[in-house]
Figure 1 (cartoon, one colour):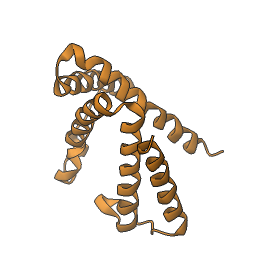
Figure 2 (figure 1 turned 180 degrees about the vertical axis):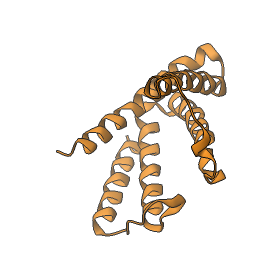
Figure 3 (figure 1 turned 30 degrees about the horizontal axis):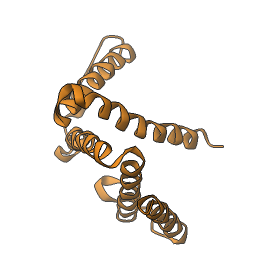
Figure 4 (figure 1 turned 30 degrees about the vertical axis):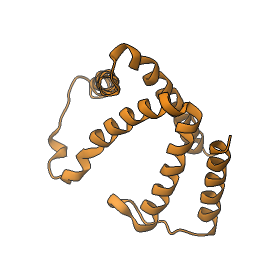
Amino acid sequence: MNPRLLFAVAVGLLLPVQFALNSALTPYTHSPVATAAVSYTVGALFLTLGLLIAGRGHLSFAPLHGAPVWSFLGGLVGSAYVVSSVVLTRSLGAALAVSLVIAAQVIASLVFDHFGVLGLPKRPFNRQRAAVLVLVLAGLGLQVLR
């Protein structure tokens, strides 16, 4: 099997872990927004350490000059995602929250690929992708009908 596919599966396994960890932290922060701030602070420290190790102590932000302004909004989107995941996990449970998020991600991803949104290469919607969408929505339907 393609190692990238295995890596994608491993990354996918992190989603419910992140939802559960942040949900467990929220009673101590008393706020989903504070939980997201703590989560991003820990993540930023970890990433900074990784950058320092990989760059042997040298960080350069000069290559960022000229990047589209909208490309910097990933942190904003990620923050909203983390806050929402805390709220959804605590109110819906991890399985339903993750199922809804995954279904929405698949739908958005298919649209983004088809139209090449935000600079992605275009990958047309086809029968195989339609089948994936049907199966994901069927799985979501089974989860909602529990």
